[in-house]
Length: 244
Length: 289
Image (tube, rainbow over the protein chains, first blue to last red):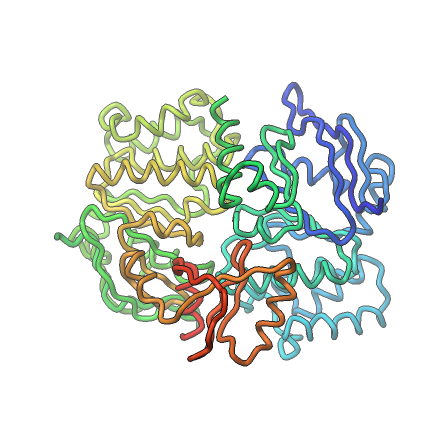
């Protein structure tokens, strides 16, 4: 199978605390994969291992076909990352941010120039090419941040709570950008606390106390848990963990 | 009903950027009032003006009958404020933070223990841990305890649930419901529209302006069009097609469905008419403004 991400018993321990406990899953190419869990369930730790930023304690994993132990540099070159904290340079213009990140990922000037035009057109920001990022409204910043994270056409993009605090229309426009990127073949790995957004994913995993307790399409998860919404699925899994 | 917070034509600008545009409304004594809106809507500016930490450019406001400019000292004694950014002392332990805030307000934890007990027992096992080492949910509970330690008349909670998972969010709102019984006025802001329904009344705020202010049921009752839920195997494709249809007035993804409104007199065949949520209303009001 053509997998963008594979993990097998991936584990991370900090001292005697097991943050990520033998998780195994695969994400297919072009899939929108929702990575859910309560605060402290181990999502960020797992994501940091997949991005090549943290070495696992045990288990196996590949991202974009590269081994997470030995080829973390290759992984970093082939993924995009957007964090919940806004990650652009506020004093640079929209186009300058694109040029900076394009350059960091080794794109040549010609490729940067044509990709900048294309991105600005898709963002409908052609007139804001030279606008400093700090003067953009927060919903637009978030969209620019996403465009920058996929500027070098990575195989996979990791989005860590990308829509926190965004207005309801901008949040939906943001998800339309995600759909569009997935259509172009970019695999999307996304965390969110908005349960309606879980419904937008092809498949969703729910992490509880370091383990993946459920993994399926939203439709099937709702059937399995006899729930009418992903919020109910989440509540029943995560509450059980807190009470144990 | 007695007025607890009164806001009259409050305006605020930062350089040339307007943050609040002549806002007016009242909040009743003992009310759980929600300020609902995205980042940059002006929520925090309003909180800072009401808690006497920021001067408005124009307008008047009072808290518990006290003017926010002339009587700021009195106000500071009777309000509790939980800022959006975690602002306790990270290097002090849980217990030290609580003792510190109790001292500042010339009280002790014991004096108002009944008010914070439900919340405190959840962080008690970690009372010797440094605040900076707590998990997000625990930090939030500690911050709420510190904001309540002097039994404030009015509680200001600025985005207490942002970035918090759905289970902890639910728990937090259960705590607020219990506090409401103590007749404390609570002004809470949130970007999560689903939390709006848990408030007595809400103000929807966007770009420094109030879009609507009423009970959640009144707001959803005022939705001006028939709203339909539709779905397909590929909602994104369906969405693109609907957007191009001249008879479609609006179409947005909403969980597993698309929420769609049609222009006048379109006969709808086999689509389920649904009741709008606060989020539908927010979107509709944004489009009109």
